[in-house]
Length: 245
Image 1 (spheres, rainbow, N blue to C red):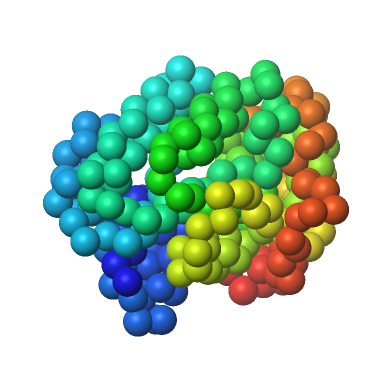
Image 2: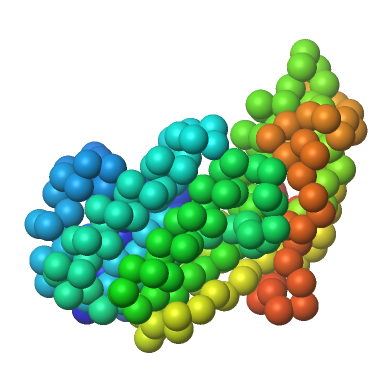
């Protein structure tokens, strides 16, 4: 089976490539660095020739609302036109747990528009929604640092290891289309400020965490990002992951 991974050179995509290749499938990474640009359509016809499955784990280079909306909608338009032309039989998309419950956050609205494009594309699909990756905690802390203070809100998250997300995406790609959504999350709920404290306890660097509900990209976000009883929960705890990375 030929599986093309849009965003296949990134954090999730590169792991998906390894997983599906290990199971004997042909896995092709598609990204601007490999000559494929979904924003312009460049390279899509060539890379999708003979493709059975397309996995889209690409991401907008900007979290700004208009830029993200343009990226996801334009990319989807070009990608699905190429998929239909190539006879792709399964599209797998990656989204965010709770994405449709955050009406005032532009990036999430852009992801909702991307999901809508998947559903109306005419290509059979499977969607995986994941909570925030463990790997994002450090960069969020860096963006929220003022001097020696890391200012973070107490918003509750249930973060997950990127390896678990990649495994779920790879599983979906090797299965049949569900035309539905699978939600996945980490095993523990923590406030974002507590995640910062856990990070600095494992990797002390002179900074301290200050709880500030007005700080970071997650400031003012409603408490909807932990999922609900329908969420599949992975086994890897953040504290254990910190010890290994």
